[in-house]
Length: 291
Image (cartoon, rainbow, N blue to C red; front, side, top):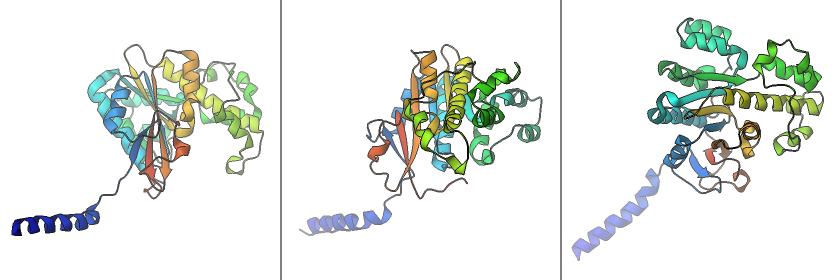
């Protein structure tokens, strides 16, 4: 009887004490239907993909950490068959990127001349340095911002007035796309940052970014390779945007999309986030931001 009493008492104490030591979760990973899954499930899917579109919230520390972890895990399996690329680097900087990776210019020169984002050192430099140290190609996929701004100010037709050399840094002209896609039609009612201008131009400026990123992804990987691309979640959410231009060009591509969302409670995926991507990283709204 004494033995049973001790066991019972220990069980009660364990029940009472356990909540005091419960761990806070930094993120929860869900599949497209909102079912919680393990990271290994996503990793295995990514190993078989031709293209992985990793959609981030630009200031989300967890997304950036997982980007780095996924890169390392894929490299262990794919080796030099892994190709990296990102929205955060513009196509006219590819020569500078290649010079740095080949050791022709210093890190200081690279960082001075590359038009880097303000959060480069915390969020993207680890990826660049990992790729460089392991002889992986890293592709600057985005259209130069001056040309996207040109579209915003003067319309899509303005790109045809650029010299031939400038057109090497963007998708082939003319650009034709489905303006009824939600990613683009939803922009018509927006006024980002209080900007004044033609809503159609704003929509077209986003489309030229998506089309250019898709163009340089397709241009820079071949049979047996996997292209891991980092971009803002907008540019791949809902299987549109970059995904749309990729599939329009090569219909048989195996594409895996990942997105990042913030929720007050991550124990269950909010219904509004279901179907945004093949895999959804839910992060607490209170998570530390990188800027």
